[in-house]
Image 1: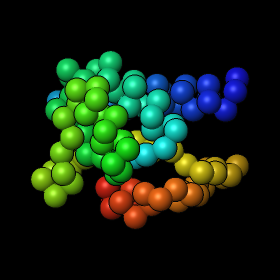
Image 2 (image 1 turned 90 degrees about the horizontal axis):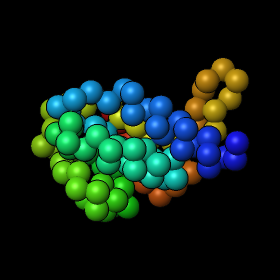
Image 3 (image 1 turned 30 degrees about the horizontal axis):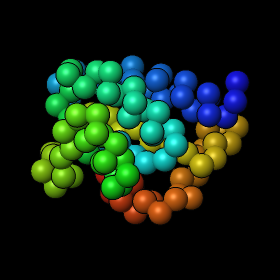
Length: 108
């Protein structure tokens, strides 16, 4: 599989962690773009999403998924994002992109 195919597979696998009637936290980046596409297939079963970037917000809205401001949501059941690197001990490095601060706030 190519790297992009692996990202797509991971994104679709993450969909299994999304429960009905919840608000989903969404990161940003190429893996998350695949996740947003997957999320679009279950958009009628979720309340909406909180996004960590303008790019993700635009993509969510384009698919008809309501986007909430973080300050308007008391908690998130799940937050889905990609990682820049993962070592053999499953320790991850995040932060190669420009949305790092907002991603950390949403995921907290």
